Image (cartoon, rainbow, N blue to C red; front, top):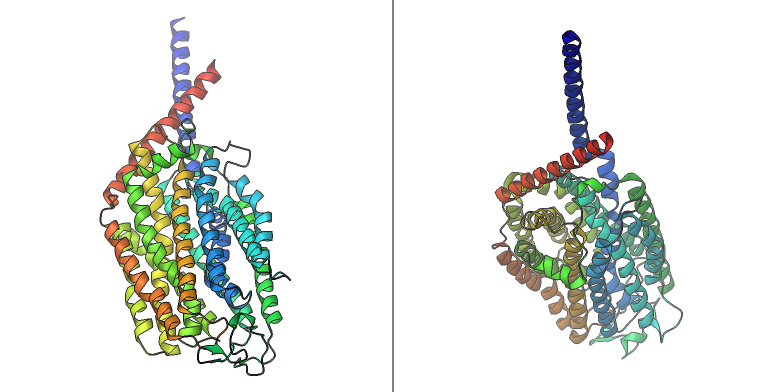
Length: 533
């Protein structure tokens, strides 16, 4: 009997040890699966960032010149379209972020349904932006409506996509790696957008109109009624008409729409949201409560304000550089190639900035990366017009543009983690953080495009003029050099007070990982008790 009891006790102890060991192994396996992303997962996730950058780059570089010289709108009305469209877009970001944060979890996740359902309508609206309607009286309404609709639908894509970083893995290193993949693809997307729009439109670039004494030569007056395909054309490609240019814009937009759909499909089928990657959500809150919550977190407010000024600087440069190259520098047939060089340089610089922020810290990378473009902004307006010098400046400026793309998105997860450490009972609001950041950057874009186009109107911009008044040249120089430099300096001053350094970031990561491990162990224990019962 005693022998039997000893054997039974030994057997039970061995069984218990095996159970504990197997549970530990299973828990460790689940932790690894929860945190690790394959290269395929990272690439599919990164591809999802391309549509926003491709369309944004095409709109940012070419919409202003399209409205002025192809749709032939008055600069005042063009400025209204650009400002109202971007302002509306900015307003929709926190609204969509609030709705996304309250979305229920589905079989496909919380973010992916927003992305896939908004895509078809977004591409339709994008295509119609680049279509010139056959009537004159309603043109302004046409562009304003479809521009606002596209921005709204793209917000329904981009805000959930931006928040997706927090749902694909709980491991901060994996998030940083996925963000680096994403930034590389996004900058590559800007290259694709610039190449498709620029090269196709550049092959059908209609002739400008000679200007005498500040007035189009054919008219002796009103510039808005200039006819295209004039025999006096200075175009290097004979026989190009307004209809050819319109068709080129539609062909380019059709190709971009196809890429947009393809990227959305790859993202949807190649990425899986992991519900366990984030801690359970706290109780839902109202829109204004969410706004007060995120803006009340000091590091987030400083990060957003700093990047608000630096983003405004780069958007002024982006929105006016095409006109600056074609009108002020006289490179009407080369501006699309100059823009392409900027984006190619930015793509090549992404790995360098990823290494730099890993080696020297993100805050140091902000200072060095953002300020590196300043000398070249000065050079491009001070050096006598030279195509070779302009290409060199464009390549160097692209390095700074890469930093402007990479750094904000690599720092936002750190701020979200810092908030979760400071407010452990308030979780599940990642979309609100990302949406308010996008809100401020888009608001900056609207302000920059609206003010710059309105400034050109006041300066006396001549639609399709081969030359522009001296006031227009001065305005463009200010918009691509002096104003961006001043805004960059203000942004860098704000960053001086940004409190999250590498030590604090690592501490936050360690604390959050411990919280997630404790919650995972508690969940495992609860499951085991339920099974035993």
